[in-house]
Structure formats: C-alpha cells, structure tokens
Length: 375
Image (cartoon, rainbow, N blue to C red; front, side):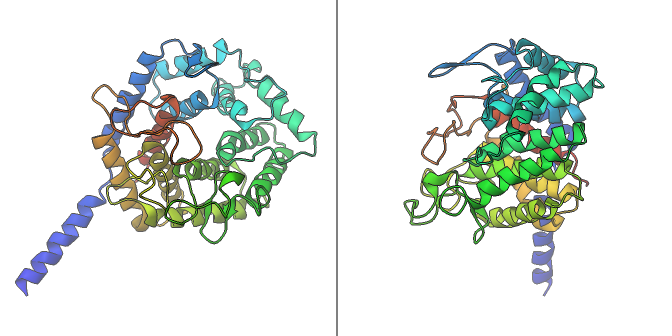
C-alpha cells in the first residue's frame, strides 16, 4: 500500500512538473535571442530578399515576422524593435507589393503592422494607413468574395479587415471579411476548404478529396491549419462580440483546437502532415508555434480549458527552446515555403528554410502569449 501511495505521489509530481509554466523572464530571454539573431542578419529592413528571384521585403514572409515583433514589443518595449519596424515601413513608403489594386492577401499582410504603427503613434501619421485602406476599400466596392482560395490567406487578410473596421468604426469591413471567410470555408474547391467532420482545413482545392496522403488519409498541412488558428485568434481578439458572426468564428476556433490537441507528437511538436506521421514526419516549428499560440490565447481569454491545453503548450514550447533554438538564436526545424508536407524539405536542426522570417514571427507570437499565462 505504501509503495502504491508513493507511486501516486511521484506520478502526481511528474505531471505537476510537466505542466509547469516556463518563467516569463526566460521566455522573453529566448525571444530576445532569436529576434536579435534576425535583426543582426538583416540590419537593413528595406533590403530586397533574394531566393530564386528577388522580392521586396514587404512580402508576406517578412510581414509575419513583424506581426511577431509587434507582439513582442507589447511586453518588451525596446526602442530597437520600434525603430526596426519604423524603418521597414518607411523604406517601403508604407506601400504594398502590387500597389493598392492588389487583391492578394499575401500582399496585404504588411498592413497589419502598418495599422499597428499608426495606432502606436496616436494616429499622427496618416500615410501609414493610406495605401492599405485604399486597397481594402477597392475590394469592398466590388461583389467579388472568392479571393481567399488558399487557407494561408485567412491569416494574411482577416486581421487587416478587423483592424480597419475598428479603426474607422465601419462594420462593412467586418461584413465583407465574413463573406470572404464563408466562401473559403464553404465554397472553394468542391464543398469548401473546411472539413466539418474533422474540424481541419485542406490547404486549397488541390487537396480536397479524393486527394489522399500516402497512408490513405486526408491531407491536412500543419502550417496551413496554423494560419487558420492565428486568423481566428486575431479576429476574435479584435472583433466586437456583438458581431453576428462572432459565435461562428469562436466555434470554429474551439473545434480546431480540440481536433489539433490529440495530433501532437509525444515530443511536443506537430508533424507537417497532421494525419500522416510517415509523410515527411518530424519536428517542425512554424506549425507547432501557431498551434500553441492559439492554445495559450484561448486559455488566457477563458475560451479553452487550462488543464486540458496547458500540458501541450508547455511540452511544445520547452521542446522548441531546447531542440530548435541555436546558441546564436537561429531557429532550426522550420519548414520552408510551400503548400504541402513535401515542400521546403528537409526540415532539420541545421537546415535553412528559403525564408528565415515567418518561422520566427510564429515563434514570437507563441512566446508572447505564453508570457501571459498565469501561474
């Protein structure tokens, strides 16, 4: 009997330790380290990015990084972060790749940070929001709502609509955002990109059934579903709760989190192919970061059960800090750009993705939300 009681005590201690929230100072220290690596690597925030072709640095990959940096700045107000973001906006003249007529959500993602910077300085610099407002307004005056034909677009575009709706107290931004979201969810492809049975999303119409993974299951790409989680978090965070579509966004968020939780690997990560661990399976930081960002935000806002989701958050964050963060701050295990598990491979500790920015942005979003978890 005594041995049994001792076993239970040890087991209880084990789970208590497993669920222990990382210390806020340590989380911030790790984020500072990874962010400094990137700022040192790219001291000129306006320098074009060259991979297979040259691209301006206000594309979506860099915009996602600045989403993370803006989140970090909320809890760690270093002037260097503000200055680095200001330099980025000014060198691009607060403009969008493709100009104000672009309908591509990737090109509009930078607008999230432009609006944040406008608000940070008390609305004293209207040039910061001029182009992004003109761009979205040009979309609103047309009946076209099928632009978001890949799920990544939800994260790139939805927060822009929410921010503009709040900034100008104009619900037409919220209404158009829902029309576009609903089209992506229910109509793109055969019957929409969302599977209401499994509460996960196909990346685009190319992966709708009958497309299957090698194991015969549906293809749910990790980072793609991570983008949807982030889109729902940012929408729920800013959208007025009396918006008629708030309950639907909330239900989709809860359903996704419940579906993702049991798919976590034993080592804390999620595979790039959520339902096929043998199809380029392994540790991957960007999707993992986005999932625990959503979990942590859900707990912090009383929407997800703490006991249920906290162990997954702690396991994932600790694993990434221990196994993915290099001594110089570089992040390993980040899948390169693409649209499915086989893209951007190999994903290893030493591999370098074609873009180093968006993975860090996801990591910073997760870490910032983890610092808000109560002990």
